[in-house]
Length: 199
DNA sequence: CGTTGGATCTTCT
DNA sequence: GAAGATCCAACGC
Image 1: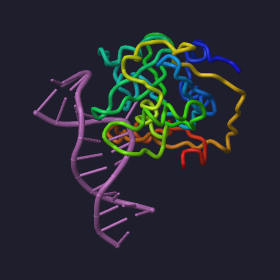
Image 2: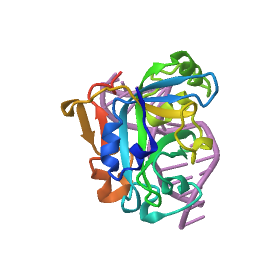
Image 3: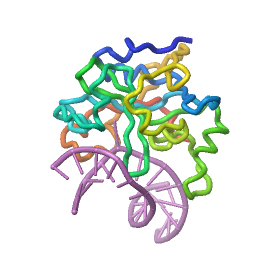
């Protein structure tokens, strides 16, 4: 198994990286002693200054978007709809605000811990542990305090265990929930492993 | 099954 | 002051 290095994320082809992340393992031990993780099965690419769907469109630089302007391998987390944290991995070099949204996992490690984290918040039982970006961040214990930190073993990291996703197993579609982005909403920048997203 | 609406709050205008 | 890279349960069929 190989830990994915910063170099991996500092390459310039964000779409290719988003595709390569499919089948990789992501781990979180943000809470010490609580190791959780799973296989990445769905990603979306956000292409920085030229992408209307990206928070950093037109190189809009704010406190929130700042991590995206850093070098690849950093973490960008932000709050959506007031209640969901969304996990992104920054790519490309410094000053180019590309990022990849991790949308879904197939849970493999620490299922009991994820189950617990998904319990409270008023509701009773959750079905999917890590299907959907908000759910996934909750199961991994990610909050926006992680935003701006680096991927790091023992905190939050990604490993390659040699899983290969064949081209015919990969699905491509427009990104979810970005209708406001005009023509960019149609771009085929969402990637997923066919059949894996269904429960 | 598919569709609908409520929860909830940071961020930027 | 408005909008938003969502989730879930409750409906209606």
